[in-house]
Length: 103
Ligand code: TYC
Image (cartoon, rainbow, N blue to C red; front, side, top):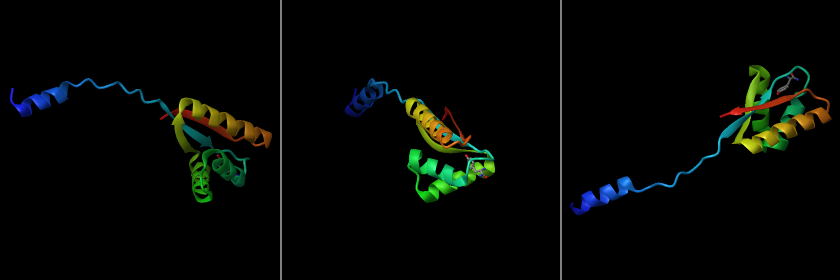
């Protein structure tokens, strides 16, 4: 086997460690008729680290389209965000719904 051929076959058969990428989940906000626009913007700033401009853009998207993505996270983080949003909304007596689905 010449040098070049040997180098290629070695590279081609090199075992690769199997990397397990975590399953990722989209966190979604749903529209409703009662939650104020200001409160949704506050949620996006507070729990999803969005700027005022980005939070306003996402809120308007949800308002007009019915649902929108706040962020994409590993499962446990997504679950925590959903709980935080729902708890905070209920505490402020808004019916805002937040859910997650596999990305
Ligand atoms: N539709 C609400 C209103 O007109 C605003 C709103 C936007 C509510 C996004 C929920 O996820 C939501 N006050």
